[in-house]
Length: 172
Length: 255
Image (tube, rainbow over all chains, first blue to last red; front, side, top):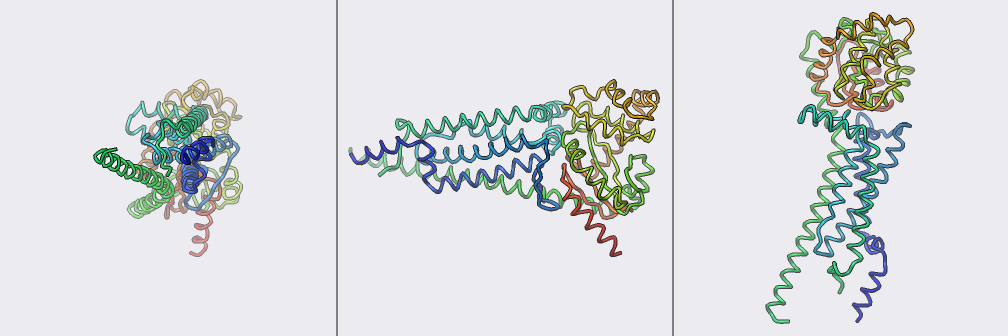
């Protein structure tokens, strides 16, 4: 009876409150967000570690930087929620986490100008140029798509967490 | 619930909790791994390039990085060639990050180091970004033939459009060149159509390969005599250049 009440109370809360009431998931989310913020800004050539540590934000990079911040935060949230799901159910990670994070990562850089582009060109030749140019030319739309995928991933994770028929909670 | 069922449930639960812990720990390790790699990627590359550049310098008696040889090669040079420091800029007119550098960093660099005679800037062609990248490189050297490279350089970067969108077709390049006062468009067109400086561009590409440059723009900052090269990869902001150039100037003054 007591368990049933607990379950009802639990499911009346949003998935965010369920997941982030545990400091572990807040920590995972914060670390992931910070790491992806660094990775995305290094890839976008806004953050440099050598010869000195320097961050700069030219006018033409402001929109990209805003989208980068949103992507990093969303990846942090989605990853925490998915780890929560793995730990508390038999479900697997959502595919949308990977697709959203990958598109966000690739589109955050001028693929043609960086070593990513060079690797693509040396591996695939002319097709590599086409691929890297696609990511460079459609950088902003791709980042918006990655944000949309990550938002879908949050929605999907929310459903997985709040639909008790799919979960096997460790409530004692 | 019988004994067999209890044991089965207990085994399942143990297996599940082990796999859960295993999976989420693997994820954390992967995320940390990616982050740490990203943090040290540029630092390691920088060190590797630096060592490689030093090796090339020591093994090359006829130093191709000396301002004397750069002048002989016909590369476009901005500023006083006698300046103690030389900055080699390996760039592609189609590369968006090169455009960012030209717009944000080059003007301050020019004002602080080039106009004051502390450094000179040498342009090196690195046309690797798109299928059309060779065209503006050829146009650049054709304008250099008439002493108008830096004017065309400004016009091209000011009008930069998406990679391989046709903005650097020969016709468009001739239109851009016609905006430069004092440039003989007839001579320029003949030079561009005849691909006169293809070998020059290919030599620049060879030099970039030799120094293992893997991004546009890339910079090699050397002493005037070609010694002590340091490599910067990417569209670095002004403070990165200051850190290297000021250090070199201090060393130069000590000698």
